[in-house]
Length: 229
Image 1 (cartoon, rainbow, N blue to C red):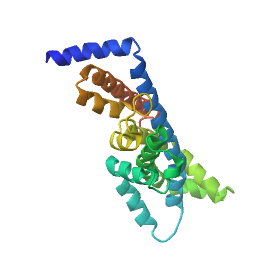
Image 2: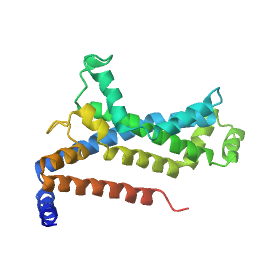
Image 3: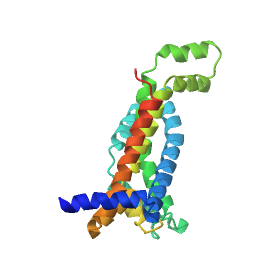
């Protein structure tokens, strides 16, 4: 157990002395995770409203598909994005492979089903009279939908935070499409995997502690932003 204790001590030194590489990796992780979550929210919330309020053939099948995609394996997402962004792929000319942008794309795909599915669950739990009252008072269909979303705003915030929690520690997709390039596309999760393999336990522990702290902050944010029932 001595090596573990020594690793924790050295990790504490790396964090408290503001090791540049540790904080560069942390900053990149926050950038790509927050970027992917914001994009997933911008696309996922309107889609959830459409799937809740709309009436079209196959609607329940689409919702079932979204629920299934919540458990989509990260390595499958990474492989799919890699195929599209590689030089032989349809988007190869964009030269996005092994960049932070590629990581955002992969994490966006992972976060979106979570945001959509949890938002749908929240919208379906709203009293139908909320929508009916808004329509009676002269609101348009889109206005009534916005009113329903406002009624579920705390649950929607929880859905967004759940999407962030899904991607902040993601490793499979980020490793495949980001390339784990030092100083450029290395995230906390991919760096931990690499440093552990190299035997750099102190560095890996330092990154792991920061990752745990980010997860803790996400849960604290959830408790603060979402009131208890």
